[in-house]
Amino acid sequence: MQTTTSPIPTTTSPTTTAPSSKETRNLYLLLTISLISILLLLTFSSTSTSPSPSPSLSSSSSPFPTHQKLILLSPNTTHPNPISSIAYLITGSDGDLDRLLRLVFAIYHPKNQYLLHLDLTASGDQRDELALRVEGVPVFRAVGNVNVIGKADFANPKGVSAVSATLHGAAILLKYSRSWDWFVNLDAAHYPLITQDDLLHILSYLPKDLNFVNHTSYIGWRESHRMKPIVVDPGLYLSSKSEIFYATQRRELPNAYRMFTGSPSAILSRKFIDYCILGSDNLPRTALMYFSNMPSSQANYFQTVVCNSQEFNKTVVNHNLQYESWDTPPKLGQHVLGLNDFGGMVQSGAAFGSRFLLDDPVLDRIDLEILNREPGKVVSGGWCLGEDDKDPCTVWGDADILRPGAGARRLEKGIVRLLSNEAFHAQQCIID
Image (cartoon, rainbow, N blue to C red; front, side, top):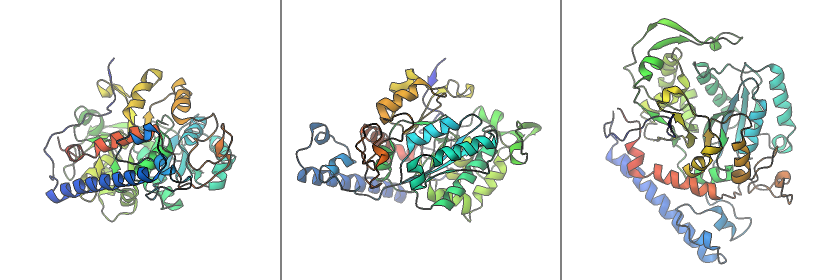
């Protein structure tokens, strides 16, 4: 069976619902050129006043100066831009407690916010144990940025309860803090392919209104199998687990807005999350009402809302920065990643990968070769000052100090390619 690393087909068709204005295109082009020019100047200035850098640093043609170059000036030098931060919602089901904890250890950084959700398929005892184990990690307890949802929801990926749980989690994260820049929803089957220092370093150079959403308006077989059927998700109104059920009737697709589909996971700006939860525009709510009776709503809701919003459809990057492999044709399901996929994952430049099985050996290899993480420990970053090689994060320093590495360079190449003027607009909310 063949596989493809693209979860959905994309298109470069020039036809759009509302073609980008010349001013908008010129603005993004000017923004990109200005950004790269300024960063190149920073690179030149840092290398001209620093001690003789190693060949690997001085020969880099990267438009993003790595923090390693700046550290050569002074060990206490902070990042040239305000450090971005991420609000993570991590969802799991019955039996996923250990997977959630391992994922949090792998993506932890003091600048971020983390909200863990064991849905109602898990017992209350599992949620209590998760909360106790989070409280037992000294850095989690000291910083106070890892929280567990006590009053859980159902999050059936086949129904709309998954969208409801995601919006609920985003609202809680907004209540905890409004200082984060991006919202990322992951599940227990995800795992990082770069460190948080790598990811935050690159995000800190980007406009904070960008939304990384894998999307397409090409519906194809989904129209008859996932969009026209009418379903009821009991997770919205029952306290016990129950599968969704299908009505005998079918309905036509909406004509008040265009349908888009994609991957359930995305990297969304805080401004867009505000719009979905608190905005005065009614599109997020009317779309939610429509999707409440559609199968697999999580793969359609945010794509449809962002691409039909005049305020946000010019901020969409058609990639979720994740490595996913899908069977061909894609309706057969998502491919499970393993050791044979390791090289492709690394070379992709993605920030995350999915789906991974519980304790698959490839996760140990990622910990060893990419994250440099010991079992049961967080990934060491610029904020870790301890002298113990196995756990330097027992002593904490400035969270604004980053130590990006090879992962940042891989991600940088992908981001630059995605934000090139031609690619950025050619794959942005295209109508097929």
